[in-house]
Amino acid sequence: MKNRILFIIALIWFCTRLYGQNLTHMDQVFSRSLDTVTGCFVLYDLEEDYYYFYNRERADTRFPPMSTFKIVNSLIALETGVLENTESVIEWDSNKVPCDTSWNFYPAIEWCHDHTLTSAFRYSVVWFFQEVARRIGHDQMESYLQNINYGNNDIQAGIDNFWFWKLKISATEQVEFLKRFYLEDLDFDPEYIDMVKDIMLQDEAGDYTLYGKTGGGRIGENKFIGWYVGFVETSDNVFIFSMNIDAKDFITARDLREKITREILKAAKAI
Image (cartoon, rainbow, N blue to C red; front, side):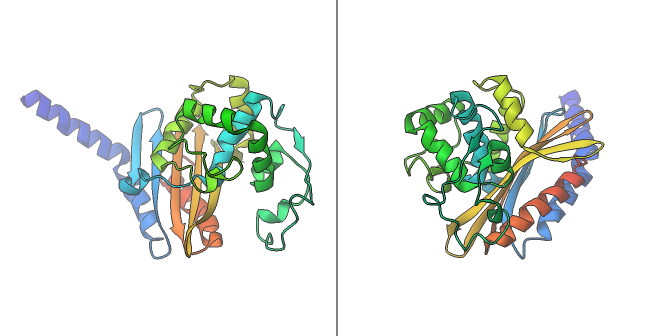
């Protein structure tokens, strides 16, 4: 019994030395923003098999994935042959999808022309991925989502908009999906997984490479969600992350989701 107690004390001491200072810093990053937003953060250290949670209750709460679903949509499109590769083009039909005057903010200002999968992913082009989903079709989409167990798997709101409304996933579940995705522990061709990883590339520095996808949209009256999910490769480790925040408008959510994420990843010494 004594040895067991000493082991537990040693384990607590080790974890505190390893993570304590950084986790306190991560909490402070969010605390500084709580006058503007509420949110959560999940960080998984692959080497240590360790999870950090900020606001665990919210991290386990499901929300529409918004444009973070483009990771899955891209993967299914490649696997089913709807798109041949990341340079496959879908032409913009201005009659079917008129260039809305309200698309005067980033990244919507980039939507009104033809796109490849790579450029559509980079600029989060809604009409492109709606067309991709229509080409995949209800039955195939539903089958693949059930296979990977993506949140509540609910696509009943319509094949080209379910990820904005009925489909819901938690930040914790996003990390679990991304862990399987990164480790290629999914029933998809590894070649297509690598293609999607390539289009997720966002930042490449000397000592880390950041891959991710943002998402955002209205979830209530004067209430917008902002997502940022992805992973960071360093020379000796991988950190998988997922966060979401609530804000009063899209622009606030858009700007703070990445700012907060980068500050936390720096605190965790991931970037």
